[in-house]
Each structure stands twice: as C-alpha cells, then as structure tokens.
Amino acid sequence: MHDAFAALLAGRPVDTATWSSFWDELSADTLDPGEPASLMAALSLDAVTPETLTDLVRSLHARRTGPVRPFPGAVNVVGTGGGVSTFNISTAAAFVAAALGAQIVKTGSRAYSSKYGSIDLLVRLGIPLTKSYDETAASLARHGIAFAGYFVYPVELTVLARRIMPLPMRPYGRVLNTLGPFLPALPGTRQLTGLSSPGLLPLARKLAAAVDDREVWLCTNDVGADELISFADNVVHPGAGAPEFQLSRRDLGTADGTLSDLAAVPEPDRVVDYFLDVVSGRAGEVATQTVALNAAALVIAAERETEWRPAMASAMAAMRDGAVRDLVDAVRAGESAPSPLVSEGASGE
Image (tube, rainbow, N blue to C red):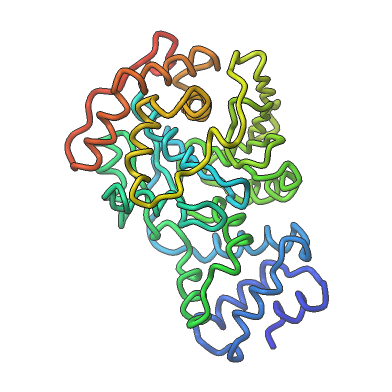
C-alpha cells in the first residue's frame, strides 16, 4: 500500500513529496491492483484537508515537462461543476467576450452533474479541441477564441484513468471537477472560475494560490451555480489580495428570474439550436442577461472594460445584433472570424 493511500485511510494529510512518489509508481505500474481506484474513492472533498488537495495540485504542476507557450492577455473561464444544472453559460460567455475583442483560451470538461459539459457541447457544434500550444495560438489569432484540449492537463490523469479501467472515472467526478480548473498549464493573464457553493471558497483559494501562470478570479453566489447569475447577488474574489467585487442585481438592473430560466434543454437534438438561440439573445431575458454578466466579467478580467453595466450592455448588443452568432459560425466552419466589436469604454484601444 502506497504511503499516500495509507495516509488518506488514516485521515492524515498527504504532502507534495508523497504525491510525487505516488505518481512515480502510478506511471511505472507498480501499485497494488485496484489501489488507484481505491485511492480516488478515499479522496473525498469532505474527508481530506485542503492542504492535501493543494499539494496534489502542486505535485502535478512540478512534474510538467516540455515547453509551455504563454498567451499574454488571454482569459480562461471554467467552473468547478457540481452545482445546479444549467445550459452552457460559460461557453456562451466565452464566445460573447471574444466577439467583444477579449482573447479567450477556454478549458472545460465533459458533463458530471449537468446534462452537457462544455466538451459535450463543442462535439455537437463540430468545434474540435486544440491538440497543441501552436494550434491554440493559431485558433486564438484567427478567431480570438480557442478551446484548449487535453494536452494542457497533466499526463498523469490519463495514466490514472487507464489504471482504473475498466471502472469509469465518473464516480470521482466531483473531486476531479473541483481540482480541474487549477490543473492546466495555460499561461495567460487571468482565469474566471465559478464555485458551485460559497463553502468551496477556502479550498479554492488555496488551489488558486498553487497556480503560478495566471491570476485566478473566483466567483460565488447563493443559488448553487458555478457561474455568475443575473438574478442573484454574486461576489467575484480576485487574486493577489485585491478587494472583492460585490455584484448586486439591484445595481446591475437585471430582471427577476429563477433557475428554470437557465435550464438545459432535455432533448439532445435541440442542444445546438438552443445554444445558437442563447448566443443570439433569443433564449429569454434572464438567459441573455446571465450570459452577458459572465461575458462582462471576462472583458473586465481581460482589461478591455472597467465598468460592469456598460460591459453587460455591450455584450447584450453583440448577441442581439448577430456578432456573436457570426463568430460561432466562423469557428464552426474554420473561417476567419469577423472583426471584434469594441465598446467605447474598452481600455485596449
């Protein structure tokens, strides 16, 4: 039994060196049969210390080899999952922000608690994930947006999945989705990560501190969603000790709504059409305002705007005048993207 597994079973913390030893033995296939799956089962968010999970993340970052290409000024948006099920808000917001001129390099995953994760949606849209940093840079230059593939994640996760087979990884989705946003090697300016519960904030802050190639902004609300929600009061927690953004719906002037306004469509054959309605501002006022709010956060994180209400207004205009749909169509077709819209208050001009 490896020391990492023994410590988890005994309720003791696992430090970076012990995790590194575990990855060594995992890669060499010298662990006891069934031990990788048993360790993952013991790696519960409710049973281990934040330090154990943070050291796990640090151990994987330390093992990264090979050149990593930076994307200065780029922003990522990815949630921890595990919250209420909604349509793909962050993917829609990524397209909107890119249409407004922000550089977006997005990561994501397949569905865990939702009906369709960002990768599930991209597959249906016919948009491939990039396979290298060069492909990512080319997509970013061509469209202003790129969907980074599995190459940005530690190879140890792939090895782990192989060692666990034929058992599926889905039972461990909660912990993997929580750690996932903090694992990619994706040097950029900032990352916007929604938390499905404010209770995850202490852990997420420690995980964010383990990320040294981009500043991570964390988002919380009181409705259990891992995105900013237009009809709720939200808080954005920037990194580096900066003051929080308190986003009151009264100050933003957004409409009343419920989670049913943000629900995913149940029919698989309607997923694409509904997403296209969303990015065109035709899925209802609450859906439009929620996507616009998340897009506003991205353009502010990208330092192309400083005020929330004007940023939201620009986002909704871009959705309703067809600019975002044009960008989605260009990415799907592999064509050069239309020129991004720039709001009068954008700081990038």
